Image (tube, rainbow over all chains, first blue to last red; front, side, top):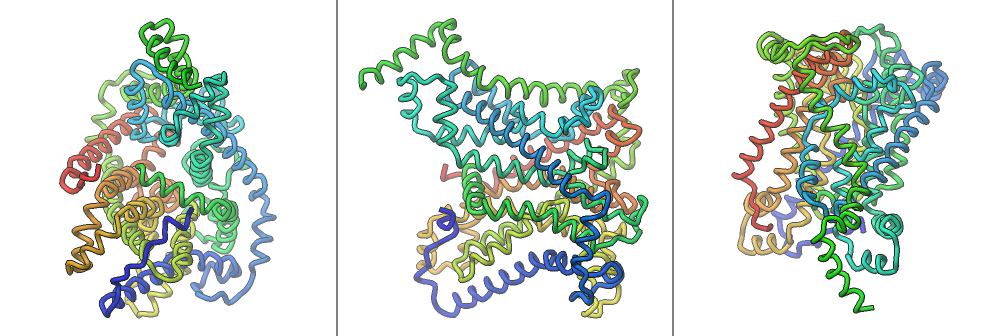
Length: 301
Length: 317
């Protein structure tokens, strides 16, 4: 129950002027923070509505011109901005990465959770401590490998191949935590009934841990969608851009590398809004589950 | 049935005594299931660390196969001669420190506000989660637009108050880093959720008793709330420290990928990115910098662990 997390019993003793003052402060702060949180969105939307001249010369808080449809038309038909392609590229990476992460990490977690092996605890501790390693330390040899092997530009391999080797250690940890909470009897009963170990994993462990899978899928989706480092590193062909590095097309529309030149904010805003649509839809569908799972992870962390 | 179940542990104990039978049973399955991840660990963690260290002792560049061993020269050069390296580390530390404090304070404040029992909480909650949803690559673009000195909304609001000189925000080298710190302090999403979860774990009775005993709200905050969520504060401090030192996306967008204007937004990850992955692809030198950086992160994390002894109250567990 998502609502359970946020509801709280009313304090019966909260009465009198002091409590009222407290309540007023809470409301004022909530409203102030809400305005701060809404401001970027509001500005994004109104800038998307402005004409090019207005957006790049005046700081109007209410648009004096309305060119939303023209802006959208300009952005969508702009020859370099192949948004359908960018979106499919992004989804291609996300799907491969997420499926790989869920499969290999849950398998590893299953192994760690239910089988004995000499030095298992030490192995797991070593894995976990690798979480602390900064990507900067690992990135160079991996980059070197992908460039030298010629795999760099092939089907975004550098962006998803690692996921198929269970490299998302946080996901392994998360799965293991969930698996350890499962009743042992369930697995033993299946074993007695003659189910193979792999079948236990596939038909008992996975179906009984849908919340864990959802959590990993959400984190993987958002993480990949927002990732700028990987695409900045491995994507050089303008046609194979992903959503994350598509906005810069318009930011640099009238510049040739110099940063002080004119930026057509109206087009940039439209591109930002377009990039937001998939995330907003994704969150809209999975919001409740997301709040639950992240709150749950927080407690365990 | 019951007899069968009790039989099972005995069977297992027998297996454990003999390695060969254990290999056929549990050990084999352990390797079967974790094998891919263990191989991945070797390929994507173990090998890169070793290789980075080896590289750091050479003058290797990406497309140059003939590299020579230079010993600790890269390290010495980075620590004594490279002004940009020193600058990027300094700016990363400043950024991590201030942005970390801002993020911690805002996320705790937000979590406390969202933990209140008020009307319209559902609406406020949705609104306050909005910044969490915006992808970081879009955040940079939106704030650049918002803070643009001539066409941005913030300065036009400030102009209403007739302030003499309006800030130049990210355009000027003097204020670019501060601007980035301010923007990053809105990135409280995940930390806020952790705090919220911790706050909700505090039994309501504690506050009721405190209220009856006549403790003020400030007193309740310092004597009940803070000690009880201190393990989560520590967890967030570690997260924030590492996040801040490793911050890349925002600086990449704000500084156009090269620390613009005049290196004032040059954080270490950006500088390393420029050194290793742009021409002339100085992998060896970048590897040495990465190792120094890693040691710095390690030192700070260790320092946080030491500090945590003074404020984390672990009597619940």
